[in-house]
Image (cartoon, rainbow, N blue to C red; front, side):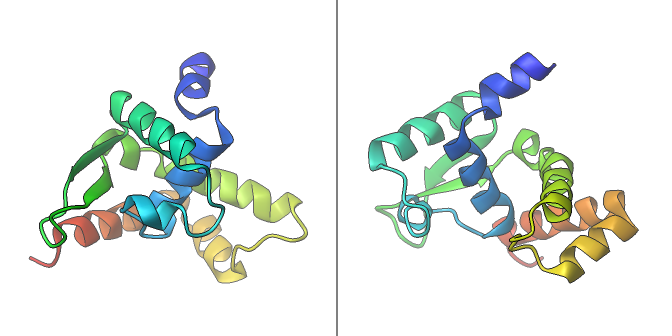
Length: 130
């Protein structure tokens, strides 16, 4: 199990991309270049890797026809509990954490419910209101 997870997720840029998809609402190629700014060839490679692993899908943006949207699949969304656990661990051990205390407190109060709420919000954002 660890071997498979390391093969899919074991690269720092992959983790940053997944963080951006899960928590920062990034979906377009250029958005991923805004903060940490990986080289474009590295970004392309990692997105292709995640797509081949079934973690994301890429499709044409209906609003911006010349752009592609990256979205998490169910497999990708299922990473939410693991990422929340990593955030909790980091908040405990990193004195310079950027995670708001309220976020961590809400997660710790109900980890399963918090993860489900986060996933539902992502699904709602990708499909729009009913």
